[in-house]
Image 1: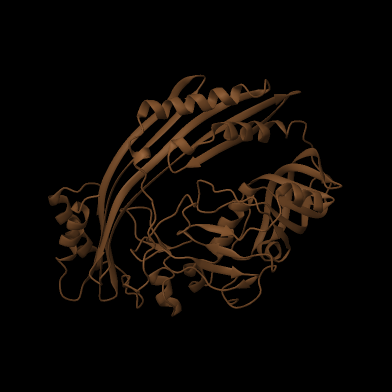
Image 2: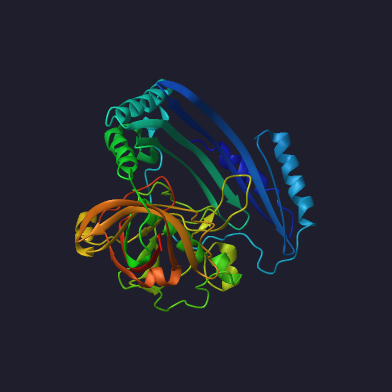
Length: 448
């Protein structure tokens, strides 16, 4: 790392006028995307970017501007534009920048030199190898595509309120999508592997997972309707956690758009549920040492043994709620301003494997995938209605595959009806970790 980005940010903040708060966010990065099909490269992108975002707050009004270059002339123009935009801002009594809160950052190895030096030809070779392995596992399988993705960069954030941070990180993963053919039908599947560097990938496991997900749904039919116990696949649990996390977002709470806005301190879930947002866990794909406002990232228990302990806050939402930031300012890069959000959600795992959970269910459904999650969940009312596919559990054993059924419940009931959390934590290329989850009393709508 160099001091160049910090020097740029320092210079911008040093130009603050009386009565102004200034934040300068400076970043540069690169990414690679490889997609192969039929033994050939179908899509390849190697991109690099750099830019600056400047936020100015004066008299309760906020002005923001950005540019995708670090040219000195452009930076001066962005600063002038941000100042001009202040005049168009709506006065907001809670407007302000983050201030140092005394929480120390936790040192993490977020940058991997082996990944940084990994050759492009080797990235392509990995995607081709993953495709080849997957094809060879089952004659019913076609590979839709195999992919290699990585990205990394460095950023500096400096504010006139005393925040001054600089860091870098990188990450990578591979994935494969499959099609399984049988008796006039086709089912889809996928698999993936993540690692600090490509040497940690498990291509065989990713390939086998993609094959299994597709082939085990061949011959699936609609199930009868009724209420039953459901075991969610780790990926489905991770997707659900993303939705649940949005209801614990401080900005949604202060705007009255969360079903849990008035429930702080209440029991809102089964005692089996402890939900943690912990970007300091090095196993998380989205691990970080600071949030998008330059404050130290930290471990926050959101739900502890069923009790709603806290919401996640940025400095802005915390100011509105009358509480400190929880280190949960998130931003998409230099072109955007920070907002509140979860960084790395995970349920505290239980002690039993998925096989043991299934054996203990008796009769129920293993849900392998859901569709329409975002359109089928109302985070204000809590209503949930999503399409799903999976496998029937009969007498504690996996039986026939099922598809085209609907799961109906509410977020509140889902959390309250959690029976058990599995031990099989899976770290996914997203902001939530997966784990098997047993939930009772879920309505399944299939055939009448």
